[in-house]
Image (cartoon, rainbow, N blue to C red; front, side, top):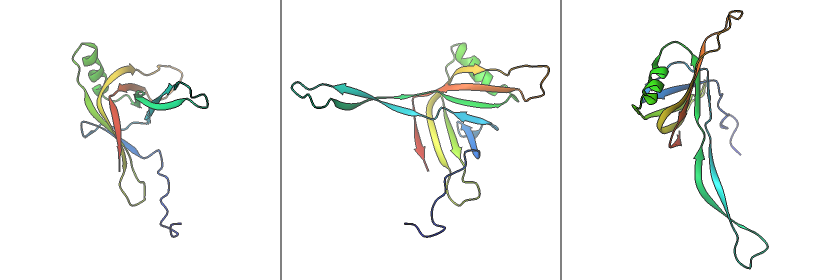
Amino acid sequence: MPATGARPDPLAAFRFRVRIEGREAGGFSEVSGIQAEVEVLEVRAGGENTFVHKLPGPTKHGNLTLRRGLATLELWDWFADIVAGRVSRRTVSVELLPGGQPGKPVRWVFESAFPARWTGPELKAEQSTIAVEAVELAYHGFVMEE
């Protein structure tokens, strides 16, 4: 058991930053879709009736969704390039920062990302909320680093 004060506490999910091609991409209010799943292949062996072999298959990744207040056209321009057939894949990283604690950030690096969906703000005259855009990024895979 670690000594008192030596135990690492879980990182807070509200302290993060997003980088696209190593450049800070502005203030995002939400990042979701950091996930990977290994497909399980079931193989029956002849004469073996007590179990089915389970083998790892291909890995599937969901889309990464980034949400932020609509301030610049940077994400829209990237999406518009994809729509026009000018495919520009980029490296996107999400860093979870150790707020007030010593240590390095935890970082997820998404390779070959491109916008697969862009969602604009909901416009309502009776509310005074921030206009929020969302972009879903498809990617080949990710690594987790510390």
